[in-house]
Image (tube, rainbow, N blue to C red; front, side):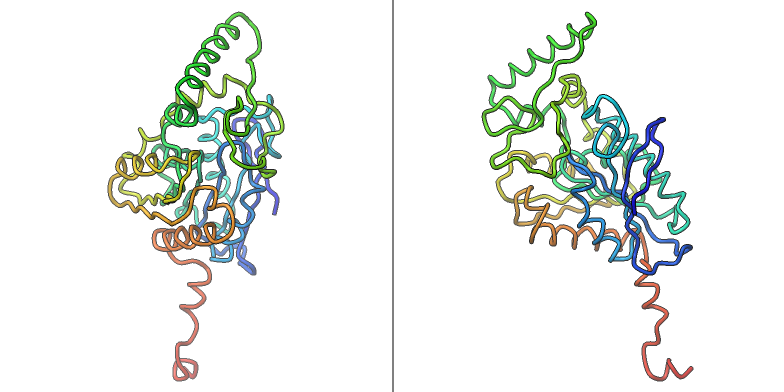
Length: 309
């Protein structure tokens, strides 16, 4: 179902997925889901349905300035804004009568894989976190997407843009997605993905904020709450394997690392999606407690003699 919640005075759009037939007072464990750079809740339908079928209340969100959420200018991509949206989504999920407010987990992939590490590090309401192919260092991520000359060109652009903003001019823009070799935030080795919400260029100011963002610094604050990092072993320039390893190394126990035989984009459909969701579901069931289905199963008679009692 479509729902909305307030995030610093702006309306965030979200989709709430509940287990079929769940009671209004079911006290479900809940999961907040957010997508990566330039993608929204329309790309989280399969994930939301999966977690609901597994017995969770799943809330997939559009960040402010993206998708169906409010906020101008569109495509404003400040990482700390996304952290705030996650935290307000947790508050909304806690307010739902179907949800157990003390059993909330968060899930993120790609850019939001880093966001959930940041969120869990500063918000103790998060009882379990899954970071899939996470971006752990904004500056390092922007740099690894470029060759040395392209990186220097981007730094020159960011410096010039800051001078322009100080002089009262609006921030310049850069295409959000481009093919390999094009001037863009993200290189794309195939046709542009229609699931991307980015319909207009992104402000260079957003890239400056991305370059200032380092969620890895918050990883050690998550313990003693559990964290799972999911990574792919295949070639993937957009989701560097080294960043997943950096996150896992920075986490303190209890922590898990699962490496699946896929590249990062394969986690968004087909066997890669199925495998990653199975791993995440097992983790959340372990650390958020019984789901509705498990509670119902526990109440069922286990033998004919039990049924007669």
